[in-house]
Amino acid sequence: PYKAALETLGVQFFALSGQTDAEQLRNALQLLAAQGITRVLVEAGAGLSTGFLQSGVLRRMYWFRAPILLGQDGLAGVG
Image (cartoon, rainbow, N blue to C red; front, side, top):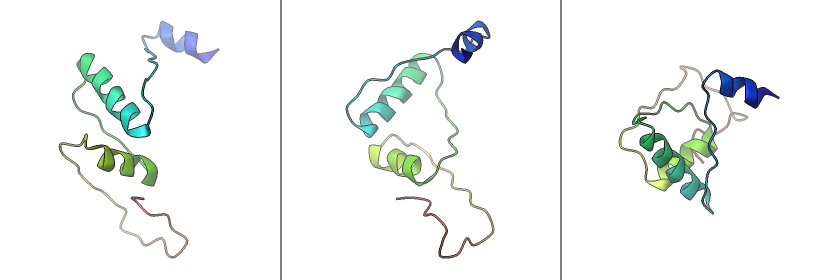
């Protein structure tokens, strides 16, 4: 029900192709580039951060982290 409402506001939805996560990530970035979007800000957890690093799609990366320690129960920033 929300998709139609978002489309009336100009939101576009795209289906991604690719077998692996890396292929889907590359395809998503190529699709965005075809739309004129050449820069992406990604706030990611360990899985997506690792995907960007392993897929080789990064040209530049800025890493920000909170000035606190999470302790032994904290999650890794990169897998």
